[in-house]
Length: 134
Image (cartoon, rainbow, N blue to C red):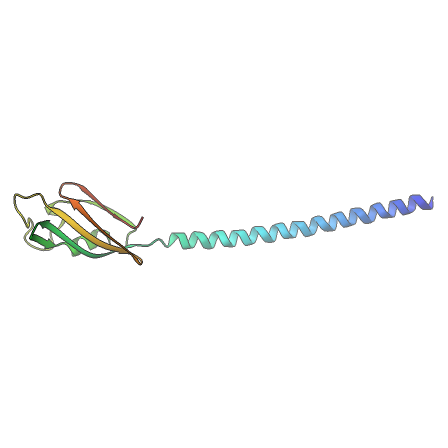
C-alpha cells in the first residue's frame, strides 16, 4: 500500500511539473509572439517611409536648343516614390518657348535624387518617361 501511495504521489508531482512547464512554455510563446509583432510592425513602418523623388535638374530640347524643365518635372514628380508622364512640348509649359527646337526630335534629360541615391536618364520625345525611386 505504501508503494502505491509513493507511486501515486510521484505521478501527481510529475503531472504538476508538466503543467508548470506548459505554463512557462505558454508564457514564452506569448512573449515571443509579442516581440515578433513589435519587430514586424516596426519593419512595416520603416518600409512605409519609402524614399521620394527630388528633381535636381531637367532639360528639354535638341542639341543647343534646350530649355529648363526642372519646375515642370518637379510639379509632376517631387515628393512621390514614382511618376510617369508623356515627353512632349505640352508637358513643359513653364518656360518659353513651348517648343525649344521646332522640327527636331527632342529629348528630356532628368536628374533626380531618392534620398542619397542619384539618378540621371534621358527620355525621347513621344515616349512615356518614368521617374522613380526603385
